Amino acid sequence: MSPTEAMPTDLKQAALDYHALPKPGKIATEITKPTRTQRDLALAYTPGVAEPVRAIHKDIEAAYRYTAKGNLVAVITNGTAVLGLGDVGALAGKPVMEGKVVLFKAFGGIDAFDIEVDTHDPDEFIETVARIAGGFGGINLEDIAAPHCFRIERELRERLDIPVFHDDQHGTAVIICAGLINALRIAGKRLEDARIVCLGAGAAGLASMHLLTTLGAKRENILMIDRQGVIRSDDHRANEYQREFAADTDRHTLADACVDADVFVGVSGPDLLTADVLSTMADNPIVFALANPDPEIDPALAHRTRDDVIMATGRTDYPNQINNVLGFPYIFRGALDVHARTINDAMLTAAVHALAALAHEPVPDSVLQAYEVDTLSFGREYFIPKPFDPRLIDVVPAAISQAAIDSGVARTDQAVRP
Ligand SMILES: NC(=O)C1=CN([C@@H]2O[C@H](COP(=O)(O)OP(=O)(O)OC[C@H]3O[C@@H](n4cnc5c(N)ncnc54)[C@H](OP(=O)(O)O)[C@@H]3O)[C@@H](O)[C@H]2O)C=CC1
Ligand SMILES: CC(=O)C(=O)O
Ligand SMILES: [Mg+2]
Image (cartoon, rainbow, N blue to C red; front, side, top):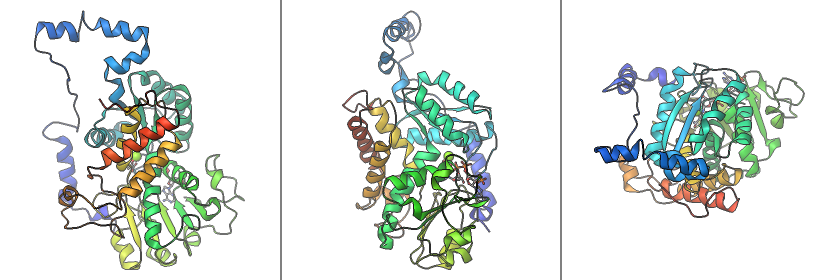
């Protein structure tokens, strides 16, 4: 039985009530200026509002000074890969997008709007986003299925001079890399030698394996798998993005691939890693079962199967939550603080190392209280910071802003937080 099937009905009902009451949805807008008097209105609206209009007309960079642009991110989806639920359509993706808006605000202090674009045509999607992007300081693409997500992100990056960031690719990649650096240390293994199996060769899988190789993982040690099996160089079905990882191997199935593997990364769907297959992995196997809401293997089953397993999921209710919530609020915070034009690999790498290092530091009491535990210290049950860690907002954005400045993509060389 998967964890969600095991989820009590009252929790499912509580989730529906949470979203419905006391008023529908999870977000609203907030006014930041006085609006009580005739004079307030004359400033906020006509005639006063004409002054910032003229200033921006003369110099578009003035939008950062006179509008909410600099602290505003659009969370945009087409609903084609919503969590692990698949192509549920743009509107059904809205609760997740509102959720991302909540997390941007709660963890990053960033204002965000969710936008659901109802099209399966990547060109229509790109055109829609490009035309509304100017009012935002950044674009967070969310839950857009591979392979369209790759072209959508590349073309929008080329067209826009604000960060365009596909969270499921790069946010996930950052957290997987940070978690894996630390998990490998616990296992007593090196990234350079690790034999890695990645189940899911879509947005999250391909971006994560790509970032891992830039950090030292060997491409020849990685096997990528989708519904058809291992992506091999002698089959011709791989798309242009998967071909980077097409392997010279006679292993065809997930079971073949996992024999003696050091690491399993699951970014696919529920209950796909069986106990039998986990049994064949190398000693101290690292299992990141990251599909949401149901992981590739129930952690309880994994621990019953192997007492040496080093385990993480994408969920909040188990130890070691490898989830992009640890990434996007802080990555955008660091980027917005220096009005960055883009988010590049140097910034992602800075985030990886900042997150990995923080897990080695003593854990603040507020985190222990939030998780109702007496102690947490670096080890099998804690190798990635908790989302409620109050140090994240200082440590990660600072590393991102500095990397943006050093790599020449910041508009200012001093971080300014609105
Ligand atoms: N913890 C976290 O922070 C994150 C977790 N995820 C999770 O990762 C999963 C994938 O997301 P994303 O990459 O955006 O989606 P995509 O649609 O881009 O890719 C999904 C990939 O998973 C493969 N897959 C799906 N079901 C199976 C299966 N039964 N057997 C083998 N392969 C399968 C697909 O193969 P095929 O093409 O053959 O169908 C495809 O390669 C989701 O469950 C999502 O919740 C994603 C981002 C962040
Ligand atoms: C966490 C997330 O972004 C996902 O599962 O799609
Ligand atoms: Mg997502």
